[in-house]
Image (cartoon, rainbow over all chains, first blue to last red; front, side):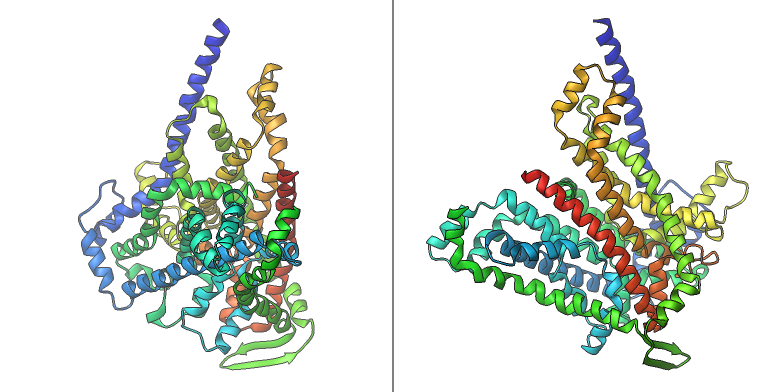
Length: 285
Length: 306
């Protein structure tokens, strides 16, 4: 009896320590973002004077200042980033679901070989073919165009793999067969029956593809150099290479805030399903 | 099985039709470029002043230059060092957190919140995150200001002028961006272990530490391997964070220039021959690592089925 009690107390103390460590880690993770919010709401001279834990009153002032900066077309960049990321998210998930469906629902000779092939190319980074990609885009006359940043996402092995995993547990073939008996066309079956069943998986992957496209810097930086076509990461790089000391720090923090917070806000609502998605996508694999 | 084949046989062609978009796009935008990279790597093709020299066929000379001038080795070393100082604390902390989160006895409160917070940096724009760290850790930035006010420093520490400071900051950002992801992967792995193993060990009087060492760790090995290799592939791709932090220079004195920054520099300067050769080497390296990931994934898929 006494031993159990002692054991309980030990776990109690352990729990307190563990919770304290978790809180500490949370603070460490959130601290940079906290300073970011604070400083994007302060006037440049105040930021120069030093650090503060209290927000200032210049949030709207900095925002307006940034929007009106002729050298940094922020509104356009926001728009460009959004167009590219949203189109990528839609195309990538829809066609990955289609590819996964082809492998999942049909029996054909090359099926196993094709599945193996897609798994093998899954991890090859895009950077290693960037030179060829750039030359191709140039020959196609598509530099400064969004198409080469959107269309290639149709072939997304990682998204394919996640949706394929999801199908194995959640897409009974009986439903598809019932639709066939009712005389539905294969393509129609896919659009009206399969895609709705896959909605949870598609939603999670949409968030992942959207953010990775939103955050992408390497490839867009090669393709886009027209000021009207630039995306947010390119503007950030441009800001970094400008003469930093002459810059209004309120503006700098504001641009970072604008780049980061759309993702954080979406994440706050959906973190649970996103985290589940991370676990399902890779580990059960 | 027989029943399934019967019902599918007349639909076979649809399997191929549904694969068309993927393969069409893959071949045009990935495979053809990749093959052309191999081809490009065999040509002398670079920008000299305003003139583009080449392309002239020179066989493997680009590779010889690349391997003999020492830069490649330096940048490979930088990449590995920064990756290691980010990865070691990451895997240790992730393992600890995963074990805590997976342990139902500890009844961790607000576990969903904690997991949400530690995963969040993974979705943040790396270039913006890096720009944020650049401003926070600049000579007169908030961190230096705070450290001086707290009496820890007498004068600002110039993070970006010191080798350790710059590499440390890049590693810290990589650590912050990835430890949540690793924690979740490891946790899912621990939760996938048959609980009767833990119960049996407890009945036999094993301590928590013994259970962790002799049951959890060995059974986590496949996931460990997966995390390690994917992290290595990610490490080779390291670009946004050091590029923005050092404005592409890899300063101080190129000690934080990574392999992809080197590639980016060749692409930017239109040194297509060298860029090609470097890409091919990076492709071979990542392809070997990818094959390892592939085998670990298919081994686990077979496990689950069998």
